[in-house]
Image (tube, rainbow, N blue to C red; front, side):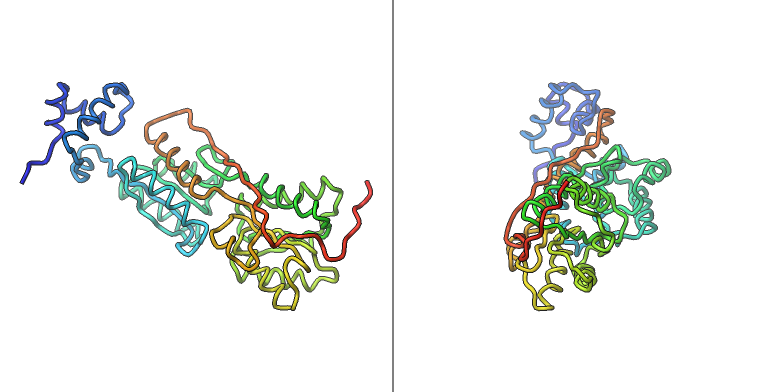
Length: 340
């Protein structure tokens, strides 16, 4: 059996010390990029394969990333997780996945466990702690990035405000004036920004904001269905509904169909996320596209910058875009535009 190539073998071939080789392989900022690139190319040519246990003992770096999600059944998270994992693996990191089930105490326990496992850094989605991470990470000092928390200094988010405005503006231009919003009962920044975008467009067009047309869902099919039942029971139901996410929108459409009405003839519906299922739903769902894979990819890239000790890392917001399909159309009974 051929002997495994060691750091000492690479150091001898490169004419440098073993510590220089180790720093180059681990992207240490004190090694020049030219030297590091030469050593990494030599290591690849010699067939070097790093020993994770040895690295952990010497550097206390396990080359692992902790990824906190809400729960594995959330269809929004699949591509995001894929973006994190592929970006991590490309840099020699493995990923530990753990679900918080939208429970703040459980989320804190996960962060503590990740700290005890000596993970190198953490990416968090659907956090219930929000800006409490500043205090939490003083207790458990680890580089961390939050997804879809734009007010946090180390975060990667979708433009939820702009995406919501595109959706509601589309409905207004179709002629709708009674436009509902089905929110998420959890107090997420994503919901707050989407709700703000909804209200901003109504104000822009002098359309009254009615409390009865803003009803609470929970991001699930059942929550969307129940919310739409409440809207249908109003003396004057909405002619269009903007939903917190695609899953909510599908629940909303179920309730519309259940009373013998159809989408979009009797009520237009718009979601948010652009899940793979959205294009194949019946009818195909008009929605706001979130770049889920890029969210994960960019979150991992930001985390790597923090791990390297970069101090110029800033929050990043990715653009959202409306995807018009078949669930949005003009109201069946045109409503007059309010005079200014």
